[in-house]
Length: 370
Image (cartoon, rainbow, N blue to C red; front, side, top):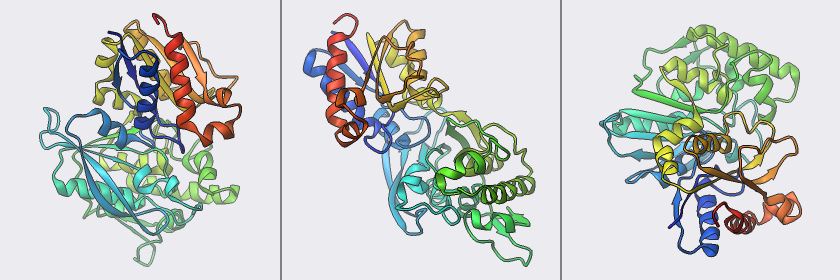
């Protein structure tokens, strides 16, 4: 019996990684009914991180919670409790930014007022539960608040010259003259998942590079926010040039200040869900993401999965919403673009599950050994 591992990332905005893995596996089994399908949905710290762990770790338990979302209204979400282990005797909590303070939770951009408080509230709930390790995915953030909202939810205070609390979000950053960490909750082991290596400030920093995605369009606004982030780093005693400090609008820097370790998201998720062992016993591996482009070879899920498979001498097949002309697909034995199959990007987006199924069927027929 052939064994096929399905390890896609989410197709952002259309289908979660776990659903994509199920769709591809179902399509493959419609061609090869006797195949053993092993589902290992992946993530790199962004959208779908909690769902990836929930699908891959036996005994994982969703813990419902209501947090203050980035739009200023309550969000019903959850963090994930992983069973106790040798490394984490009291269990591990997985919390992601996307489902607590993520940009997909906004109906319109709020560049000045969105913040990371909901993410911090979910972390606080996990600490209240008594976990001994946190795994935090910080992709898909809605704000450029330097992590001040998150740290506030954990007990920090950010004060203006008159001693009052500054406004939340990027709006308050330029007014911070003092940081009070006396009541900041102590951190357990904190593993921070990100695929971003940008520093906190400067031309590659959070405000300049990611600010426009969150509504900071004007260069003057970006410069004002960048200066506020720099001052925050100084008050926290942080080097703003540390790679990854600019992740999630500066949440990376805040987590460093709290004692967290920034780690490559895809590699860490793979280790925690046992992807290497699954691949070692497989005949072929299928991975994918929404857009495979010129930057996808730099630590993104498909390229990471393919490199892991290559170490075990296994072929990897790629499915992507679109495959850009400048993308290097040399890591893959075969590849399918949903846009090409559907005839247009709009058609692929409108019926992602349908075209995933078609891509899966085509790959099953063409796969080595079929």
